Image 1: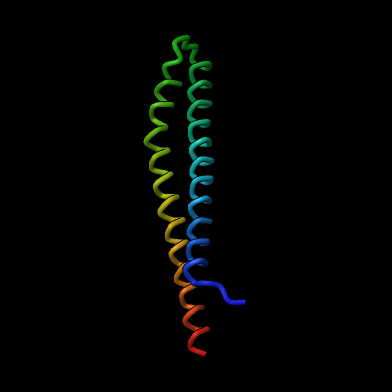
Image 2 (image 1 turned 180 degrees about the vertical axis):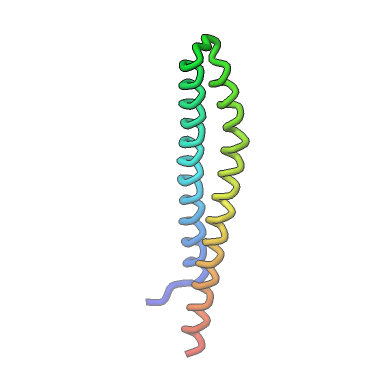
Length: 97
């Protein structure tokens, strides 16, 4: 059963884009949750009623989240590029024989 190589490449890239979205969203939730929990704990421990550490940690979590999302996206896209190159090589090997 022969498939169009462009269709296989499109399916591989679509799969990767979906994975990037899910993984980055999960990472963002984890980072923001940790920042919120740490700030809430620290404010409670120090007796701050204004929750200043929670606000500071939440604001500080945004650049950390952005950095993590970019790194994850770049890593996953590199993985996708290797997958597409492997698919292309397989197609070349099939046509050569």
